[in-house]
Length: 235
Figure (spheres, rainbow, N blue to C red):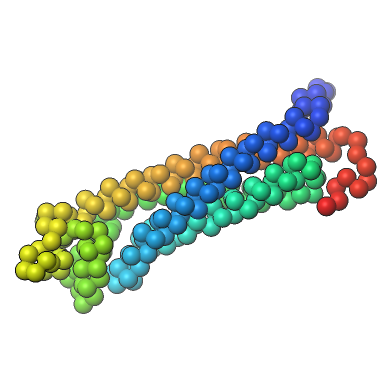
């Protein structure tokens, strides 16, 4: 049998310092997720009436509600759990580290799921689905929703060959505002960049989180092997 006892650092300190540093990095990234999630929720809240009027499919509903809210909630949890992680690592609390590992594993799975979903929506060309819903609403009884969105996005019509009428476009007196600025082009650039950024950031943070989990597991093993008093694991 190969003796693996020397593969880990001989003192917990050599493990807890990198773990604390990783938690500080994740705390900062958690704040970034909170900010990005808040911006996305604020931006996409303008599409709530549009989503309801279009009887939106699951992909469009996920785009306007699920993904932004998921990013915001994950960011809040990161801010909290990383502070706890720094404390239990510094104090070398065995039970606290085990709980920290379990929560971080759950967050890792959720984060990869949200990031992967964002990348999938980006690759599946969600803009085409939004375009179909846009024309459906524009030619229906709730087309005032389109006027509201066109004012918000500062655009007119979905595309040059779309069936939605320019009568719905915002007007300045008798003149149509934003003529030639099509909403499809505006949303394509904004959705694609935001979704890709959320997906890429989620996967990148997931990698850092996985490293932090490994360090915490190594720290747990080393603490278990180190001599300590009976009151060592008490809070």
